[in-house]
Length: 126
Image (cartoon, rainbow, N blue to C red):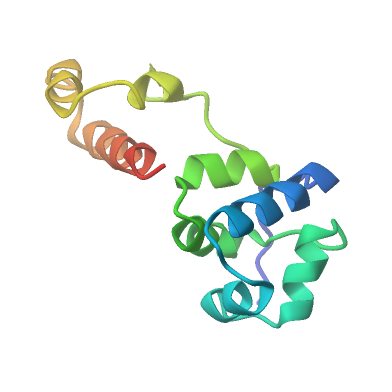
Protein backbone atom coordinates (compact mmCIF):
# COMPACT_ATOMS: atom_id res chain seq x y z
CA UNK A 1 0.00 0.00 0.00
CA UNK A 2 1.33 3.42 -0.95
CA UNK A 3 1.41 6.08 1.68
CA UNK A 4 1.12 9.72 0.90
CA UNK A 5 3.00 12.39 2.78
CA UNK A 6 0.83 14.95 4.48
CA UNK A 7 3.65 17.43 3.99
CA UNK A 8 4.21 18.50 0.42
CA UNK A 9 7.46 20.08 -0.63
CA UNK A 10 7.08 23.48 -2.19
CA UNK A 11 10.52 23.21 -3.73
CA UNK A 12 11.60 26.18 -5.76
CA UNK A 13 14.66 26.92 -7.87
CA UNK A 14 16.10 28.51 -4.73
CA UNK A 15 16.01 25.08 -3.06
CA UNK A 16 18.13 23.65 -5.85
CA UNK A 17 20.54 26.57 -5.57
CA UNK A 18 20.75 25.99 -1.81
CA UNK A 19 21.64 22.32 -2.39
CA UNK A 20 24.35 23.31 -4.88
CA UNK A 21 25.80 25.94 -2.53
CA UNK A 22 25.85 23.56 0.44
CA UNK A 23 27.42 20.78 -1.62
CA UNK A 24 30.10 23.07 -3.01
CA UNK A 25 30.78 24.61 0.41
CA UNK A 26 31.64 21.13 1.66
CA UNK A 27 33.89 20.46 -1.32
CA UNK A 28 31.74 17.62 -2.64
CA UNK A 29 31.57 16.93 -6.35
CA UNK A 30 28.21 15.93 -7.82
CA UNK A 31 29.51 12.37 -8.10
CA UNK A 32 30.68 12.26 -4.46
CA UNK A 33 27.43 13.79 -3.22
CA UNK A 34 25.39 11.32 -5.28
CA UNK A 35 27.38 8.42 -3.83
CA UNK A 36 26.79 9.64 -0.25
CA UNK A 37 23.08 10.10 -0.98
CA UNK A 38 22.92 6.73 -2.75
CA UNK A 39 21.31 8.22 -5.87
CA UNK A 40 22.38 8.63 -9.48
CA UNK A 41 24.29 11.79 -10.40
CA UNK A 42 21.36 12.71 -12.66
CA UNK A 43 19.15 12.96 -9.57
CA UNK A 44 21.52 15.51 -8.03
CA UNK A 45 21.45 17.57 -11.22
CA UNK A 46 17.64 17.42 -11.21
CA UNK A 47 17.50 18.58 -7.59
CA UNK A 48 19.96 21.41 -8.21
CA UNK A 49 18.15 22.56 -11.36
CA UNK A 50 14.69 22.42 -9.79
CA UNK A 51 13.53 19.59 -12.07
CA UNK A 52 12.61 17.37 -9.13
CA UNK A 53 12.26 17.76 -5.38
CA UNK A 54 14.16 15.97 -2.64
CA UNK A 55 11.68 13.51 -1.14
CA UNK A 56 10.75 14.01 2.47
CA UNK A 57 12.21 10.58 3.23
CA UNK A 58 15.66 11.83 2.08
CA UNK A 59 15.73 15.11 4.01
CA UNK A 60 17.39 13.66 7.11
CA UNK A 61 20.06 11.93 5.03
CA UNK A 62 20.66 15.09 3.00
CA UNK A 63 21.00 17.13 6.19
CA UNK A 64 23.54 14.68 7.55
CA UNK A 65 25.59 14.58 4.34
CA UNK A 66 25.58 18.38 4.05
CA UNK A 67 26.26 18.90 7.76
CA UNK A 68 23.18 21.03 8.44
CA UNK A 69 20.28 20.62 10.84
CA UNK A 70 17.15 18.82 9.72
CA UNK A 71 15.21 22.00 10.42
CA UNK A 72 17.50 24.02 8.13
CA UNK A 73 17.26 21.40 5.40
CA UNK A 74 13.45 21.16 5.66
CA UNK A 75 13.09 24.95 5.59
CA UNK A 76 15.39 25.38 2.56
CA UNK A 77 13.77 22.50 0.67
CA UNK A 78 10.27 23.91 1.11
CA UNK A 79 8.99 21.46 3.72
CA UNK A 80 6.93 22.57 6.67
CA UNK A 81 8.86 23.31 9.86
CA UNK A 82 7.01 23.78 13.13
CA UNK A 83 7.10 27.27 14.54
CA UNK A 84 7.13 25.81 18.02
CA UNK A 85 7.42 22.53 19.86
CA UNK A 86 5.16 22.22 22.87
CA UNK A 87 4.91 25.97 23.22
CA UNK A 88 8.62 26.66 22.76
CA UNK A 89 9.43 28.56 19.54
CA UNK A 90 11.82 26.62 17.29
CA UNK A 91 14.15 29.63 17.09
CA UNK A 92 14.29 29.71 20.90
CA UNK A 93 15.30 26.04 21.07
CA UNK A 94 18.39 26.89 19.04
CA UNK A 95 19.44 29.54 21.56
CA UNK A 96 18.96 27.58 24.79
CA UNK A 97 21.70 25.89 26.69
CA UNK A 98 20.98 22.36 27.83
CA UNK A 99 20.52 23.55 31.44
CA UNK A 100 18.07 26.26 30.36
CA UNK A 101 16.08 23.72 28.39
CA UNK A 102 15.86 21.31 31.32
CA UNK A 103 14.68 24.13 33.58
CA UNK A 104 12.06 25.20 31.05
CA UNK A 105 10.79 21.63 30.66
CA UNK A 106 11.01 20.62 34.31
CA UNK A 107 7.23 20.34 34.70
CA UNK A 108 6.40 19.27 31.14
CA UNK A 109 4.90 15.84 30.51
CA UNK A 110 7.51 13.23 29.59
CA UNK A 111 6.49 12.91 25.92
CA UNK A 112 6.54 16.69 25.45
CA UNK A 113 9.93 16.89 27.18
CA UNK A 114 11.34 14.11 25.01
CA UNK A 115 10.12 15.76 21.80
CA UNK A 116 11.53 19.12 22.83
CA UNK A 117 14.88 17.56 23.78
CA UNK A 118 15.02 15.79 20.44
CA UNK A 119 14.29 19.07 18.64
CA UNK A 120 16.96 20.81 20.74
CA UNK A 121 19.64 18.31 19.81
CA UNK A 122 18.62 18.37 16.15
CA UNK A 123 18.83 22.17 16.15
CA UNK A 124 22.36 22.01 17.58
CA UNK A 125 23.50 19.97 14.56
CA UNK A 126 23.27 22.93 12.24
